[in-house]
Length: 508
Image 1 (cartoon, rainbow, N blue to C red):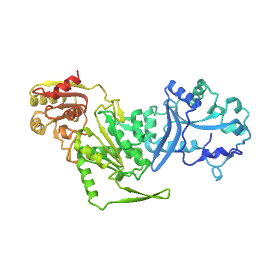
Image 2: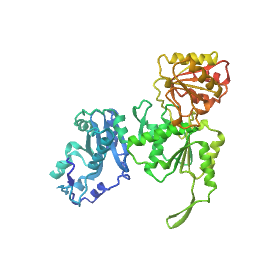
Image 3: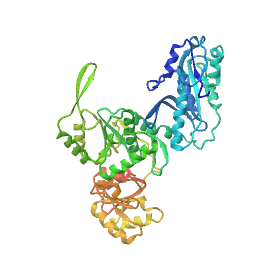
Image 4: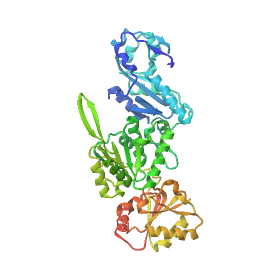
């Protein structure tokens, strides 16, 4: 079907609904025909997406149904409830784009929108796009009696009829040629379209959010809710995507993300900017604030010292007063690393708005849980009882034989990290730097061996983590630091402690 072909129907009043400018209210019913299509997808390794929204610049476009076949491209579907009685007396004619009395088909606009997004992101058309019409109340025999003009613009092989069986549906999909596009990975295809679900790994590879992550990103946070997610579960990316999507849906919303340290805030801001820059979407960065607990308290106190602000809303001819809260949504990341007093404070100031507490505990009662772990391999934990200082220096030296400096993170108390900093300067050729969570990212060098205290570990991650002074830290901090390792964690100690025994028991 050519993009400049337009339909002019007579005697079909329901046809006008096809051309509504906004399709966001369009939601497909779970009919027998839709179920057949889903079954075909499940049985043939095709991915089906329902009621998705593509964002680009300041625009958004809703697609009721889309299927990805990485070997062929994108299948778009329009669902119609037209019956034979609706269509038997209809005539169809071509019109030009200049005919202001007609409007283009929804999928033609969708084609243009998708191709524009691909071209601006990856500088080509992406993958081929094929159109199909789902006719819930028209069977293949009835189609034969329709006007020839209808058959010309809506060919038989592009319609899935009410009496189509799964083999018929699959055959029609497979009539589309195998693509020679370089993009044959679903994450690349849908990640570039659905940027609200696009996750980049540390090495820059593109991933599509898991079903659990998508459910969280799409959800409405009401009251106080919790997200339980371990390290390398994609929780940080999901939090950012959640904030971005909330802003895209409602640019007026105010969101605060709380991170334990200034350094963690800067790392998250950098990640937020990278996502927005790649996705080519318009997001008001002033509406997403990333701050520390202390900064949030100061912000709240400043507001309390000002005259009380009140908004007057007129709803259904009734006046309604609403106190302005500090934010519409507060997300507290790594809530297991902040004090219980601060959590109580958050709950108090968010009584009338929404609060999401994110922690690494395996909480079965959490509203949202990310159980999938995206580490390359199962974490190996090695316990070494020896002189802590000497064994750490030896372990670092050994790791540097086959690894880069920034693959190593050492976590201990402030005295241990300072002593190591001095001695490593004369023991290895590589540089070891002291991490200070109270300083901005621009003032720190994360490309070398990092020496960090337990109070500064938020948002850190590394191939190899060495834990010192385990008995002095809280179990929450120790377990958090342990899970920062993507490959191996070394627990070095001189005397056993309760934390050591708990870690050993959990890693037997």
